Amino acid sequence: MFIPIPDNISPILKEIGTISYSKGHRAYLVGGPARDLILKRKLKDIDIMVEGNAIGVAEEYARHHNMRVKVHPEFLTAKVKGRKFIIDFASARKETYPTPGSLPIVEPGNFEEDMRRRDFTINAMAISITPDNFGELIDIVEGLNDLNKGVLRVMHEKSFQDDPTRILRGIRFSARFGFTFEDKTLEYLRRNIDYLKVVSRERILRELEFISKEGIEGIRVLTKHHIHSVLNLCTVEDKILNKIIEFSEKTGINPEKSLLASLLMCTDDFPLTSHMRKNINLIKSLGTFDIIKVARIDEDYLPLVYAYIENSEEVVKFFTVRERISPEISGGEMKKLGISPGPEMGKILEEIMVLRWQGRIKTKDDEIKFIKGRLNA
Ligand code: ATP
Image (tube, rainbow, N blue to C red; front, side, top):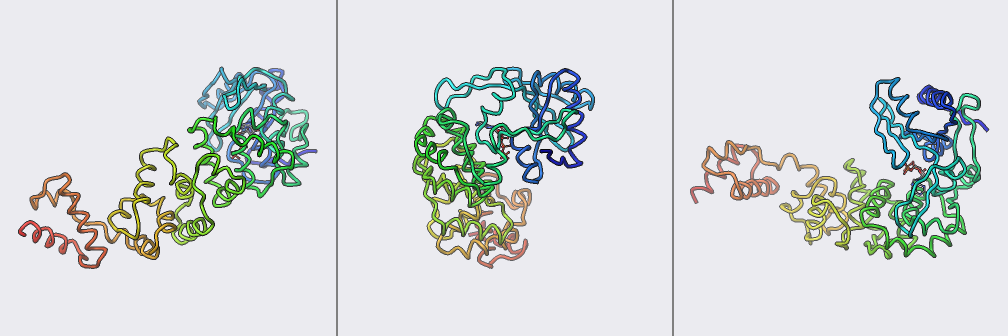
């Protein structure tokens, strides 16, 4: 079976296939991009697998186009940043996992080994880019069948044990495509779910970030498979999820940060950025609406504030007037009025914001009058 290759990537793939062939290697579009082409989805990036030295192919392609190439000999990979796409080149490899959850030992391998090391059959298909069969689908694991049925199937019984993050990858794909885990895969998932605890928190957090990008369905699928309890994440009720989405749709704020934070509100176990920790702590400290605290919360987290606090209509109001309530007076002008920069200036600015919120200050003149009155008090 031949897969139609869109015009925007066809010349790129043809050229890579030709370079590779001239070096005696066959090359393929593999993994997510192969899956997405079959699903007629837009490609985010290009993943190339070469049955031979991919680094040499990447270097020659980059040289032709005067592009920079980043090489990772230890992983047998190279990355070229094109104008429209990032192209990842990888030599066919096999991977072995010394212990559950550890990073794999990578060695050169053949086509079949490279396909069988992958997470799910739908991600283990290859589309040839070699000139003599350009566009031909090579599917040794019946991935197309699973793609048509809408199922996620692992390659072998120990897959989740080798790399428990595949469970979270599965959640991501299930949420995105509406696929379900095939029966045996679901049984392996349940049997091996506790291996998630041996994976580093950084890697888990990265996967949770990806899951949050899939919208509320990501969190729902995660909860459905009880992953939140294994990882000590919050149980986020549907009511909260719906409110996050409601606010996000009202305002156009992307819900992903709020969705992620909704999972992480009840744990200190993850290496969050200080930025995210600050926002979560502020939200946790909110009982009812508090303008000073809400104004300190970054916009990305407002959907979560809206979902959690009682008088949520105040958050909508805040979003609508947020620019109007920020003080117009500058730091320099305040200095001229006799206020030195530092905590005192910050406090006055907050007071002005509260008065603007209450409608008691409307203009810059009002602000100046307020400051003068305050200094003379
Ligand atoms: P997305 O569409 O979300 O970008 P993707 O399928 O392209 O997902 P990547 O993380 O870019 O996923 O990985 C590319 C390919 O590498 C996957 O399709 C899969 O074949 C393989 N892969 C990635 N991570 C793993 C893993 N943990 N175990 C096995 N195979 C993996």
